Image 1 (cartoon, rainbow, N blue to C red):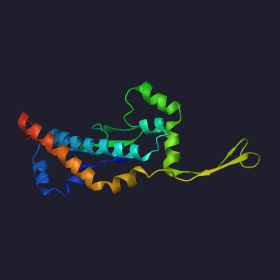
Image 2 (image 1 turned 30 degrees about the horizontal axis):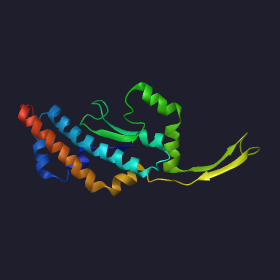
Image 3 (image 1 turned 30 degrees about the vertical axis):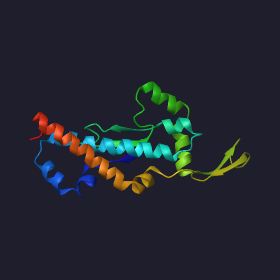
Image 4 (image 1 turned 90 degrees about the horizontal axis):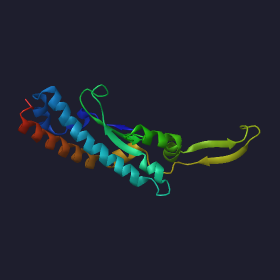
Length: 168
């Protein structure tokens, strides 16, 4: 899972940073969250592109969502497997089908594993190398795009906050 901290993206844009220091706390959080959501949605989409099409359920289980105030007081978003699954029943569907474990195997690979009664008496089933890049690697590879999307989303929300008169 990838977390988006507001400070990691705002440091490169001094103009936006100066404005944010003078804003009301709630308005600043909404601006930060809007930018982080844009970046997290794009990151989830990029991660889905990395997964082979034969793992359709695993691909569908990757998502993003806004972080609650108690999770990130400054605002933010999260992207990853079984994130933002929507309703409880849909999340339960993915968990019951073992999609989270399948995603973990695709990203991390497995060591040697056995069927039957364990290493001593079981049959060796081999191991699996990682099949796809991790979420962190995908984020690093597309850092410029994610930063640009973050700034775009934050600026758009900033304009909305100013127009409503709730920014300062």
